[in-house]
Image 1: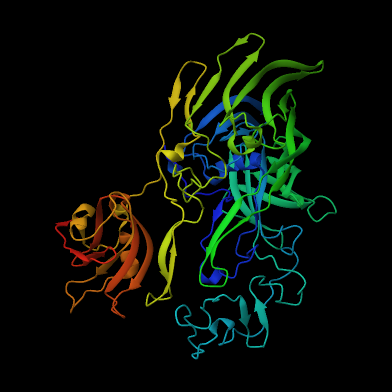
Image 2 (image 1 turned 45 degrees about the horizontal axis):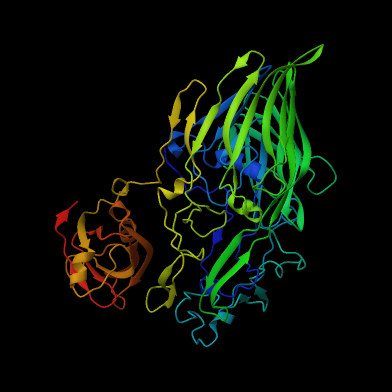
Length: 631
């Protein structure tokens, strides 16, 4: 099976590289996304919505069945499910352990993006428009004389220009807008910032999952054609007093009435999730889900970093996003016609402040005489990264589900047991040893989240503003990224399932559709080193590649740089990790281009168009390589 790290459910650790357009950032820069994610319990369930379990996504079905409620016209399974899509370092454990989710009932959760849809301005009216047009001359054009094409490096025309350390924008009607808060000063309501981005909603219940948004008119737009109908219904007088009703294609109705709240520690009153409260089947059988308040869960602040260039505040910056606080709305029982399911939990968690964990699921039958105990499943835990140092437990420990055992009158079953890929050392939740997708990469030399960048920022490659930053190594490692992932399940029967993981891959050559003939070049660093170039054995950062397209210098056959960037950036067996930044190398000669990249092997395979040439310039010495074989 495969990890699918390109799918990102919740973005909590965010490393920003800030160029000239972003260089005006202060302590709370406006370009940092303001996102309030759902609670850890909701996030663990919504992983199955973000990356559904199927061979297509490279994930495997890992489940522990507990019980099935049989209502009239509908079966409601209860079980534990594990998502094999990998564990990001900053992922918090839900109440049944890291990577696991209790599949029972369901919920609608949301990521609050910008302002809260319900309490902000999203439902408050139309989008404001500024009368007039963008002015030809902008604050970013100071010192320039050509108003139609301002700026020496970055401005293309009056509609495409760099802010150049200033977020002020002039309009033809004489108005000035400040784009650090772009909609405070636009429109008739100048006292309120407009919310133009809808929150993102996810639902998961009884095998149904998907995503949607709510439009300003409160209608629902599904991400894909799911066979469900979703209604947003007012249920009170408050701004956030709304609930969801979802009807499936069989006519069963699901009521999501119980609300869980979350937000920053100073403003935690936003609805984070709507729990499934009641099911009314097509045959009018009713199943009721009962919840209880259980304190609050505190999730520490996450770190955001940036590297600014070109303005007065150039350099590295670090600023935390606020900590989040969630109300614990815990499932306590499920009532149905023939019985009741009870959920036994406590608040004993070493890895979270205010977290809960599920200890048992008990099944009772129901008759006129009352409830009768049938059986139960007990859950047993320990911790990843266990430490005796009290003040490090929240950072180093993660709740680990070790086994699940069924017990009851006349039941003598062996447990389900689980083994995981463990760390040989303590690995914190907020360290810098992560790849671009947040998975552990084992590179212990990182002291920042911002990746290394040696490039030039310009509109067309001529000249350009140099950007040189020696930062973090964020490339993935297929072995390290397996940390904390499920390795083996031992079943009560004695059988086993062993899980083998690999990183995402793609077949570049079979993806080509242009019909261009290619040559294969072999470049050997050790050979180049003989040519008066000193290169490290395994790691050489950002040499310059020059590619000449065509048969001859005087009569070149032009090949689009966009096509070239495709195969240049994706060389054979991932030996090259390119930036996809192309530059015209010969004063307007469209047939010779330069690209900068990063090489991590002595021997690499590089693909260029038929008849093209490649030269490599490590610092001073240029070496021309000629083709010797055809793909």
